[in-house]
Length: 293
Image 1 (cartoon, rainbow, N blue to C red):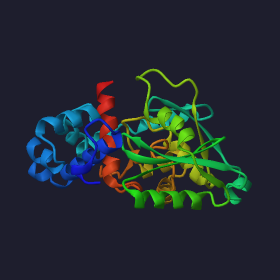
Image 2: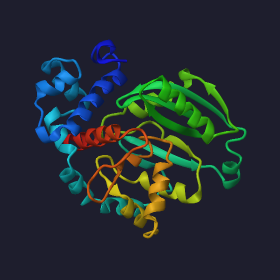
Image 3: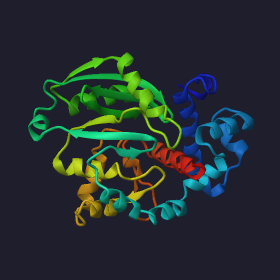
Image 4: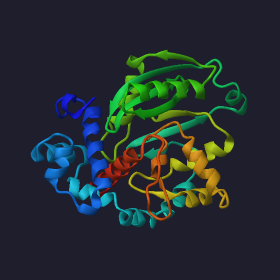
C-alpha cells in the first residue's frame, strides 16, 4: 500500500501508523540535517498542516518534540532511572503486573506441556489495526499466546508460520470475531489511573530462564528503559547478559511483554524483532504519554 492509496486520515489507525513510521524513518536517517516540517510532510504525501495534525494526534506531541525523545541523550536519561526495575521486582510478581494502563497476569506452560508444543490447545487468531500497525493476535482459553506486528501480506503470512512453529501441535483457527475483543482490551486503553475490569491473561511457552526474563520485562514501566546487563542483574544472573538478550529476542508477545524497552547501555536503541523503526516509535510514543501524564 503506497501513501497515495492509504485510507483517509484517522479512518484506520494502522494506516495512520504507516505514515508515522515513514516519517520517523526519515527523521532518524536525516536528523543531522534537521529537516523541517515541510520536508518531512512531503515524505508522507501530506500537507504540513495535515501531517502536523496527524502526528500530534498519534503521538500527543509535535514531530519536533517527538524527535527529541528519539535521541541518545534522552535514552541515557531514561537509563539513569533503571533502578525502577529493581524496585518493581522487589515488589514481587505473584499478582497482576502493571503495564501501561493494563493489568497483566501470567501463566506459563509446564515443562511437559512445553515439550508437547501446545498439544490439546486451540488457538484462535486474527488480524487487527493498532497504533503501531497491523497485528496478528493469537489467543487460547488460558490466555493470549502470541502478538506480532506486520506491514504487508507477506509479513502476515510469515507471522502465521512463526505462530504455527511456536505451537506445532496446537489447532489454529482463524477467528477475528473473538480475537477482536482481546485486541480492543489491549489497545483501546482506559484513561491513566484506571484499569480494565479484569487482568489480561498471558500464556507463555519457553524455558524456565526465558520465562524468568519475560517476567522481569513486565516490570519495566511505560516510558522507562533498561539495558541487557541491568535486566540480567535483576534476575540474579549478572554474567548472563548475552543469554538474557537472546531470551528477550525470543519473546513472541510484542508490546504486552515490552522487550522494546531494553536498549544498549550506550543509549542506542538497537534492533527489534518487529522493526527498529517500530521500536523507536513505541519508545517515543510512551515517553510522550509519560511526559503528559
